[in-house]
Image (cartoon, rainbow, N blue to C red; front, side, top):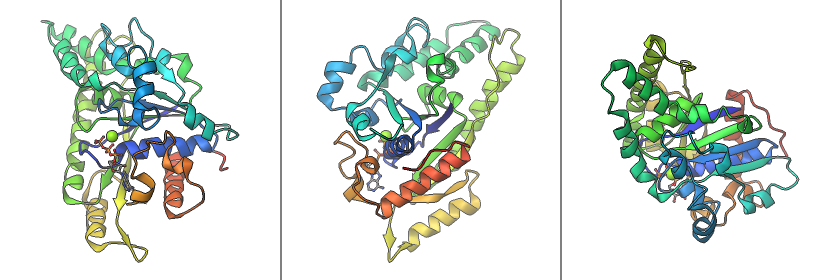
Length: 313
Ligand SMILES: Nc1ncnc2c1ncn2[C@@H]1O[C@H](COP(=O)(O)OP(=O)(O)OP(=O)(O)O)[C@@H](O)[C@H]1O
Ligand SMILES: [Mg+2]
């Protein structure tokens, strides 16, 4: 099982679209994929379930909010019990041998970050607070060690555009981080900052694991960047427009975060409805066009970086 967090502080850069379509295409190649929606906006969930279906079937019992809300996430309620299979995507994957499951988010997850942060306080001893830090930050990683997740080839975690505690639990749980970004000033500005914040988190976590006398079963973490995938790229006459090309080269040459070869062009025709049909655009697409090829290339690149192979259908 390979776990990848899809994140960027910047909102609206294509994180959810990449997560849904990457997961769907990987599943169409025969892989068993689990998507986890950690964003209170719940966009990933709503790209598979209608709002009515979410209200009627998921909202009360089957969302990640319920899990983060428990005394210590992972105690009392099992993460694996929250797995659901979106039916419309399942139908689209018939005969592929793959599967696509989801752990749904909840609009109320927005309050959880503050609650979790409050729970970090409250101990007076240094050892006690280190233990709390490790317990909380490691919660998602620990939960994914449940046998019921062992069957998945790939777990993709769609993060909110922030660096709150819930996002941090995703980083601790992941071995790789995929960073969708637009090729513009504001989207590329934060990349080194993101790298810096990840390093601080990793260092603090590992220091606590190494120095705490009672670190329990905790092991050090070493999440690396899969890289930046540029999305919504403007193509003109088969070329990336000049201004965007300049931003992409700037990041490639000067950022500490590596840049993937694959890019996804701006295509409102494919991604305009944000998945309201319940089947990610790349799975619903009738034939092979440039955008489908670009996503295929992204999946090739990501699977190869993760040493996963999928049978191309
Ligand atoms: N390649 C693309 N071409 C055209 N539109 C796109 C593309 N990728 C995403 N979009 C659209 O851009 C909007 C933002 O995309 P998305 O929701 O995936 O971003 P996000 O980074 O997850 O946002 P947030 O930070 O709010 O979670 C959506 O309306 C989506 O349909
Ligand atoms: Mg999103």
